[in-house]
Every structure is written in C-alpha cells, then in structure tokens.
Image (cartoon, rainbow, N blue to C red; front, side):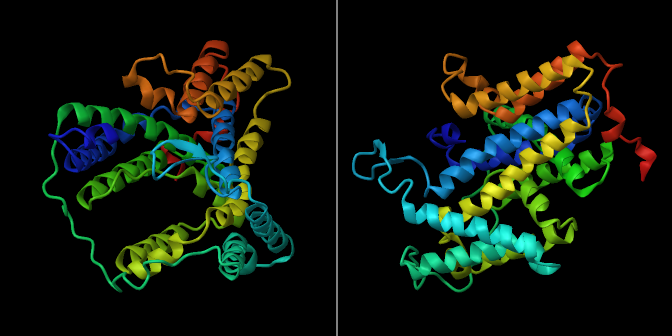
Length: 367
C-alpha cells in the first residue's frame, strides 16, 4: 500500500481502489478457500493457532514496556533507541493491569468476570492519568460530531498491477483468517462447517470492500480478539455487534475517539499478555487432541511448522534476498506455518491418515 500510495500517478485513490477490488475478490473466492478445510486436521490447526499466539506475544511484551525499543527521531528521521522503553513505571502499571485481570477472573462472578480485561485496563488508565502520563492535547479542538463521507478523496483508481498485488495479500489474509476461525470454533465449542468458513471469509471481503468506499484500508479478522474470547468466556455474536456500534460511535464523535486513543500502550500490554497467551494455549489444547504419542510424524509437523512460523518474528531479514514480490507471503509467520503444516501433513500422513480430521470437519448438513 505504501508503494502504491507513493507512486505519483496513483496515490491514496489507487490504494482504496485496489483494496476495494481485493475485497470483492475475497467475497467471490471465499467458497474456494473454505474448501481447504479437509487439509486442516487437529495437528495442522493446533500448530497454526499456536504460532498465531506465539507471534502475538512480542506485541504484548513491547506494549508492556511502553512501545517499540527503537523509534524514529523527529529531527533526523533516523531510528534511535527509545529512552523510555522498559521504564519501571510502565512495567509496574502493566503488572497491575495483569494482576487485576487475574484477580477478577479468579474471584469475580458473572458479568464482573466477563469484563475483567476491561476493568483491568480502566484501572491502569486511571492510574496513568493520576500520574500525569496521559495527554489529552487537542481534545478541545476536536468537533463533537463528524460524519464520515464516502469517496472523500475522490473516485478510486483501479490499476491492474496494484489490484493483483492486493488480491495476493487477500489470499494471505484468508489463510490467516481460516486459522483464526478454527481457533474461535475451538474456544466457543462449535464445530465449523465449510459454510461457516465461507461466511466468515466473505465478511472479511465485505469489510474490505466497504473500507475502500469509506476511505480506509482493508479490514481483516484480528487474532488478538480471539484471545479476548478465551479470556472473557463471552461467546455471543452480539458482543461483536455491540463492539461494532461502539466503533461507529468513535467515528462519529471524535472527542470520544481521542480519549480512547489516549490509553497508553503499557496499559494494553498487561491485558495483552493474557489475551495473546490464551491464543497459544488454545493451539496447545488442540494439539493435545492429535495423536502425538504413537504417530512420530506429527511431532515433525509441529516442530517444523512452529519453527517456520517464528522466522519473520525472530529474523525479519531472513528472506531479504528473496524477490520483493514474495514479501506478502514470506513475512507472514501464520502463512508460513500453515503452508509447512499442511504440506508436511500431506507428505508424512497422507490424505488417509489425517487423524482427528472429523473432530473439526462436519458435513454441510450438520446444521
């Protein structure tokens, strides 16, 4: 998107146009991607979901320390060490948020237990305000109400190369989303069908298409939210509906949005450690249902797929000599883990030895 936006003849309108086209591509090809469900028995699904959780942990850890260890200097434009990274105040507040979440989860009941993460962040935010760590600069200048108008920057530009690139990225996104949907099904105790996956993937595509119309970038399923389901135990789809309504309110009322955006990252970090770890724990739980005792091939699948998934996280320049066009594929740890796990399962176990496949795949008439 940055490459497209910085091309003089294209700009932001080409980004929005290619994003909208990629969303339409996702809607059309969602049934084809969902047909890959038989390739995702528990040994494959568990490996992928474990990698999702592991890849998210550095995000929570950096949040807890106050952001990124290296930041761009405003004067020189060069990256320098972040002097505030790892501040004891940041770590202390993140730790308080974590302890509050655990305490409410342990001793809370009903609704209180379900909103443990929210209450923990609220306390951390209040402490940060009391310590003078939160700035509300610009709040007075924000309008009370602001309407989002479609095609604000003008008509989208549809460039074939840009569209093809974004569609390739959309394929990556759909494979990642497939793993997230399977994780969500495991957390909610629902056995997914191909139709379920098709609807989920089409929702990603529809959101991306609408995003292009309303001047924003592609939407995707967010694996962090899968962890939130595991922590809160909230399994109702109406939680997503209410969340969507709240986000629409943020878009309509800028003052509210600025206040929420002022929540420091280290407050989010304390909650993130729980949520993201829950995703990895879910992957491990699925792996326990696979045959790891008598089928030694499955151990190879877990070992190599998790290792492949960690490459972009621990060695970002590992593939720097590869063609630039492959970056969307090689920089996604989730996709690398999925390709490795599916390929090794087919090679080592074959199509007739996908132990546990029936645990995750139900025929279309299961409804």
